[in-house]
Image: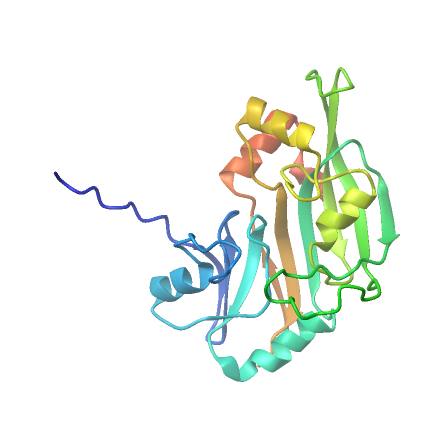
Length: 252
């Protein structure tokens, strides 16, 4: 019996590169590196990018597995401390796009979050730590109403929202949107199961609709500002078109 070779996934989309840094547009569902969260995963951004360019790469920050968008790596660990300090001290600029339940306006949320602990990595940590400061700017930029009933309402409403985190807490954007009663579609942890199911049934969409669209930081070698934009993938763009949510209304 002939064995069927496993088909390799497409190369990663490189959206920035110089002699010190490289950034990709990470697809949703790809882990940054090996993790106990999924012992069965066979592909990881670190190894995949290393094999693609033939050089070792070192992630400068984290991006959740279901989130797509800008993911920055160092090609030389010499400058790791400088860059990681920028992320740790919130001296970077980040902008995300998300599809959320309901019609949301514009505002600034200052709502502390308790640190989320990993069952394995943080098993010795104190579970009763005080909540940490967490701040997010949000702005609804496009809105739609669909003639699809999602209990108990005869229609369903959605917004395309721009999110700007001012702090870097784990799952901050997802938890803040839940707190505002506008959960991100596709969020199986902090989202709305009925609306997630509607998207699976009607649009064959089960991914988290959260995308890291922009990253700005100071280059650790040149000292100049670097701005990286990650375009939405075809699937996300097609879904926005179906929902009649115009991403071009985003002014940034």
